Every structure is written in C-alpha cells, then in structure tokens.
Amino acid sequence: MSTPGKAKDLLAQIPEGTKKGPPPVHLWNPDFCGDIDMRIARDGTWYYLGSPIGRKPMVKLFSSIIRREGEDYFLVTPVEKVGIQVDDAPFVAVAMAVEGEGERQLLRFTTQVDDECVAGPAHPLRVERDVDTQQPAPYVRVRTNLDALIGRSVFYQLVELAVPREIDGQVWLGVWSDGVFFPLGPQPD
Image (cartoon, rainbow, N blue to C red; front, side, top):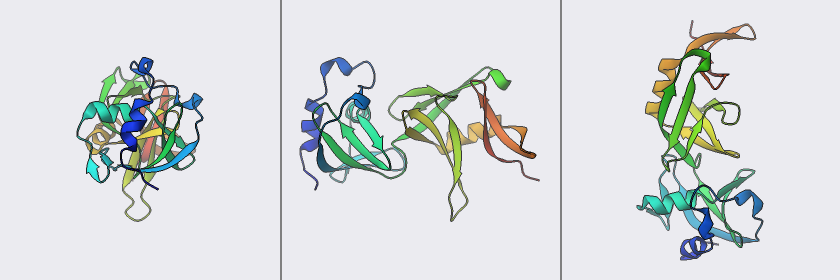
C-alpha cells in the first residue's frame, strides 16, 4: 500500500545530528510500515508519486537513509521503515577522478548524490552483462551492499585506463585501484 504524504513524515523523523554523513541505518530496526510510491530510475532520478523530485538536497537526504535487505530497498528512520522501488541500483557514478598510475592507481567515484568512494577492497568494481543484449553493466559498491551503476561516460574512462592481465590462463582487460585489479572483460582476440 502506498501512502501519499508519507515521504514528508519520514523526513521529519531523521535525527538532526545526521547531517555530516549517512545516518546509522544499519542500527535502526523499526517495524515495516508498508510501501510508498517512490522509485529510483536506472538513470538515478528519484520519483515520488510519479513525479521527479527536483530538489537535490531532498534527494540527498532520502539517499542517506536507504537500506537494502536481500533484493528489496527501504527508507529507514529510527521509528519507521518503508519500501521503495529501485529499477537497477540506487546510485549512479557520474564522475571519476584518477590519482596515480599502475598498481598504485586510485579511482575515486562520485555519485549523483555526491557520495564518494575509492574503488578497492571495501568498494569493489564489477561488470555484469545483460543476458539479452550482452551490453556491459558496470557497478561500484558505494556503501554496505548499496551499489552505483557506473554511467556510460565514466565507463568509457575506465575502458581507456584498462590494461591486460592474465587470470587463470585467460587475458583480461581491467583497471587497478587501491591495490586491486578489477577485470572489465576478456581481452578481444
């Protein structure tokens, strides 16, 4: 069941001291209060009641209280948990900065809601392939089990940085970040 006005009520429950980073949603275990008509599109646009949310500060606030449980996504406060729809991933990596080179290289991603992460052991990169189209769908872990789809232009930057490396007898193209080699795909013949 979707309840109009619920999003505003949800925002009022977020403690004031959580403005400097994401709140500790992993510590909050309120009762499930139903689904609301909120959706995150594949391009990172947030919708409420079918209309895009145009105020970035509001989107950033909602994005700070998102949590994934299995395949489901929720907005969580200390007293309420509501379900939302996510078309692909809750975030989109819209920019990447490269520091250093080779195995010491760092790849710093920025999402549409200004979260930042450096790809590495805590923030792995992965590339999945669409079963029907075989198009690559690259992701980076942003927060605990929350991923960002890497935007097309950012993925092109990754591909330009790709270097070959043999893994289990096969040559893969991939990128280094924070001491980890992330395969992007097999090297074409």
